[in-house]
Image (cartoon, rainbow, N blue to C red; front, side, top):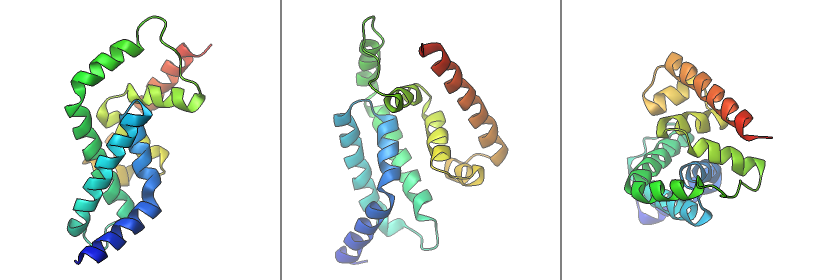
Length: 162
């Protein structure tokens, strides 16, 4: 593949699937600047992955896997910083999220890495089968986990809203 072909492919993928990449970055990072940093790393990973793409595969699933893998690696590298940030945000007097959407993302960030991946893909309309293929889980396992995640989020949101 020539560099121009790779550039054209990258441009098309970003144009058509930027929403997926942005959602993953937002769910795995806390601040807008961090989200932008993670998004840049995801873009770079997508660029490098183009030669490995197998025609016929679903592009959105391929990009989701790349984005999730990069986000999980990024979180691992930033874990010390995250712990300090979590302590700061949970301190008495910390401000509440400004909007319902930000409040929901704050709750999603409290989930485990796998739980975040599951709920994000479901919110994006992926079927249980597609989610299972991406994460290496059975369809029934995906359904059971998503049920528990939704219950956990509902409970947390009820407890934290007036």
